Length: 280
Image (cartoon, rainbow, N blue to C red; front, side, top):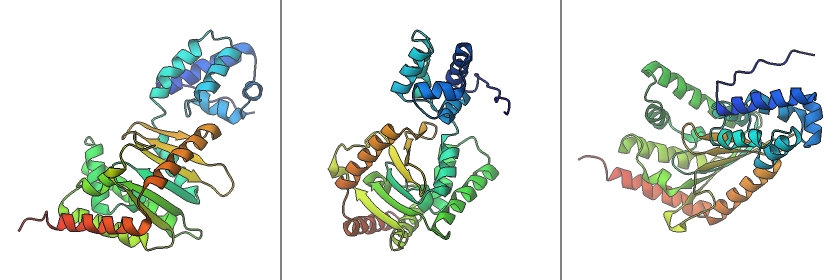
């Protein structure tokens, strides 16, 4: 049996939670499998909690606290760890994105990464990561564009995206950049594996009002959900109950969006709007 990985509780609050969880489990004399059986969840989930790679759901954390006799201390720590999920969530999401057979996305602020033009991606990355050097930004742009390979592989990814009207109205780069980006969206929507809808401001408050949401589907595994609240406030969710709830949120947003054909017309109108923005 391989030696357990060393834990560094200083890395993040989820890592601190994981270190506390492992300490309590070892004190109880249980293996990860034995503790998982008592919840019940897979022992691999216990391992991910201890490594700080995942934060358990509320009910699982409360059960862990009770079973391990933590007298509320473990769950009190969970309350804080939940606010700051693992910082490598996007890296993990990117890995799973490459394996998914379908993505259903609601994008609150920006064009989906898989559909961004080079100029649009560069501007988004530059603004989100102002501390990066020019070379680092170009590396990240290249990495983002390389993700498009999911559309050209043997079993192309299905992407169904609902774009908030803000995605069309907020200029990223100059007017020419936005026209090129919107034209790219229209071109992509004409391919068999990309469907686009627009959620207009007139729809009012909706189920994913707090941020972007992606549901990932796999050929031989359950769905996952990826929640985005900002450049560093992201969370990859595997818990079946929570994923089901996020799927329901997406379905409600999807139902409130404009039909596909009408959405294409909205994108075309937005393109014309950027044409009038150009200096004469």
